[in-house]
Amino acid sequence: MTSTFAPSEQSLVASPQELPAVDVAIVGAGIVGLSLACALRNSGLAIALIEAIPYARENTKGQAYALHQVSRRFFEWIGVWNQLLPHVQPFELVQLSDGEYPLQVYFHPEDLGTEAVGYVGEHAVIAETLQGILQSARNVTFYCPWRVVTNEVKGDRAELTLISGDPAAPKVAYLTTRLVVGADGGKSPLRQQMGIEPKGWQYGQSCVVATLDVTHPQPVIAYERFWPTGPMGVLPLPRNRYRVVWTLPHPEAQAVAALDDRAFVAKLQPYLDPRMAEITAVSDRFIFPTQLMQVTSYVGDRFVVIGDAAHRCHPVGGQGLNLGLRDVWALAQQILATPSERLGDRSSLMQFHRQRWWQNALTLAFTDMLNRLFSNAWWPVVGVRRWGLWLLRTVSPLKHLVLRFMAGLLLPLPSDCKLPRAR
Image (cartoon, rainbow, N blue to C red; front, side, top):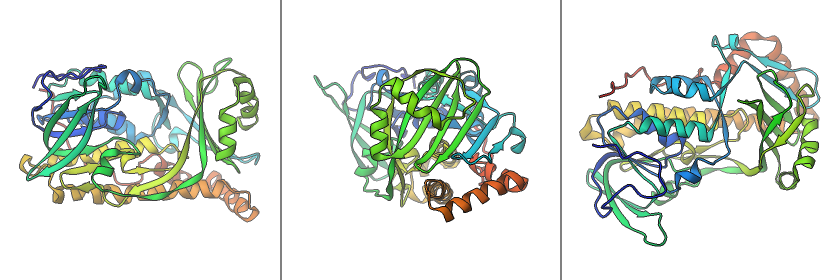
């Protein structure tokens, strides 16, 4: 199958009425969907990657992500880490602090037995690297901008109805597949079409996100700073920049996001480490509400949901994308181990659901506990969490245990399944 993967503003399909059948259709070509396509690029399976947003817009997203050690292992497993590494920022120290309380906890690479505690990567850089790798994938066909409007199971196949993204001359196409993977984000239209309901709640908080330029090189430190208004993550980026994710109550977050750059920096500065250099510039800011969500089942008839479409957590600890990549790892191994005639069978997909649902639930519960424990000024709770910080600082085995959990290395990793070699 000739590769047609090339980010474009227009559909790459000449005759859209009846598209060639595939084995796996991945709906959503964000980082999670791209990663699954990369994991399956040498499998011999026919893969369709479907994205509704033109890549000229998708690649301008301003997000940046903390990549934990489990995500590095996944990217090594699918053979793309060496291409990603030059574009991400390793950090060798994490500073954990509680407001103005002087006791601080530090996590080091030796606590994990690795050369870095973690890495920070920007959305556009990661996405473009994965897109570039897929350009040589002979079994991956890319449909963009196309939107899935229906998904109907017919025997041992699912039939997707697609509509092109050209409002002037929309086209309809039909694509049959053995398995549909929903990787289309937290609001997932495909998940809604399949009748899979999310469970969870909204927090009374929003995150204000911005990128800061500083005056001179700083130690490469990632900060997790807890305040009564909510946690704040400060992540180092390449080229002497920092990414700030500042959690605040909704009204305060809206007011802070609306400030001009000078007023924003003046408001932010007291919440940063006093040793950080002077901020010289700040990027355009954006804001998003925080929530906890998980669907009751990750699988349906010839359908599976992964990443933000399956679960959302509070950004404290930077777990979101890492959970999605663990989903991809487990699902890719499930697909590779399944005989072609059973690909997409609900019974074979249930192993993936059982493995990932409870592991994700543990991490979601942990982030929920952290946010509730630290976004709190009630003095008994303050006393408990500061005693907890003292324990983390003084009891090394406990610190190692917590860090391994946050890095994704404490829970069982997907089994050691060898990927097919490039053909």
